Length: 167
Image (cartoon, rainbow, N blue to C red):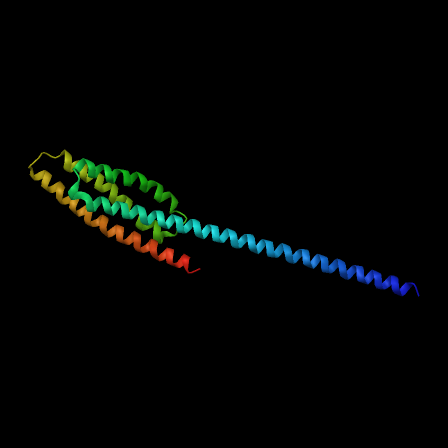
């Protein structure tokens, strides 16, 4: 008769051990899912911060262009030059994004550096010369291209940002 109760105790111990093991496994899985969710949210928040920086940079570039009437050529060149320096940082932080964003940012950056060169050439040209007028046309064309690139960068960054916010 003592064999039946000791057999029940053994089975009870095995069931208790299995239940404990199952609870520990379930707890580990829940913790893993929680950590993964937190990491995904942190990555998403970081991407949103980067997109905000890109949009702010593009807006600052556009404001350089808009303010051209109120600044001297040297001040305007300095403004674009500082945005080009900032653009090198922006290019680095957008590399994790696909070409949809990196491409337009690179184009805007290239147009900014082109504008810095055009402004320097305009400034170096003799006053009241045909060469200076030609350089002014180049500066104005660069302004148009910068505006086009600004719109493209902001459009792409905004679309990516909206898709991240809808996750």
